[in-house]
Length: 290
Figure 1 (tube, one colour):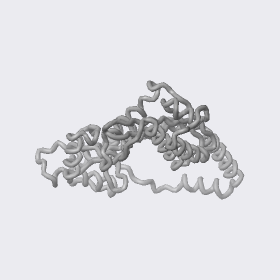
Figure 2: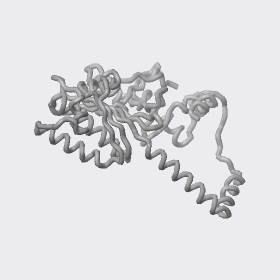
Figure 3: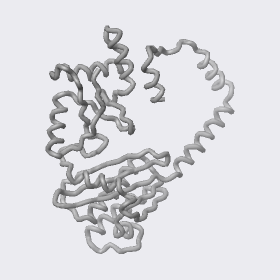
Figure 4: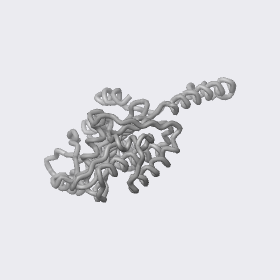
């Protein structure tokens, strides 16, 4: 659907809500005079949902610790292939084994918060995996505490499996854990929420000019407001399909599906300074000028 919107946005097409009620009348007729069909449809829907609930989600976790601090990485994948990736910086020192446990606990907590009931966990730490599946006995007091917390989370899931995987099969979580080592606790820790710098190519680079284009897109997407110039309105309509507004913030749709926040001049300067100091990893955006 998004691809069609982008393709059609190159043409001067205006979308209006249809006024005909024929389709709605037919739908109302089916609802009012075919209760047996509604019952059948509801049963089919419940069967589809139940089949989806039985398919396990896949969790990859990894932890890293060095002189820079402690970083955690986790990747949670749905049965349909959707992926949630988190890179977390811990403001405390930890051993590698403790970091591995922290990552596993954060991964299970994330899955629990999303109401996931079936999960297959993967980690490259043989010690942690064997602790959890009972092959090894935890003797260190900290390891025992971590194991108890993990087991309490495990009890929430209908099915839980954990296995040790080679490091080369856990590269995403490993990379996220490495990134977490260099993120500061005062910086947003979720990779998907790291603000992305919108580089606006205007001749006049004043704060007002750089902020006006953001408001123009928001007004168009939220209120349908267009510039008075037909040419500018057509350009805004064409490029507007590449943006969306969420929680009153303008985001650009990237090719990977991750929303990239468009920053105003004052915030952009702050993020850019953090990037220069190595505190934040910034994903480049396409040009968003209009």
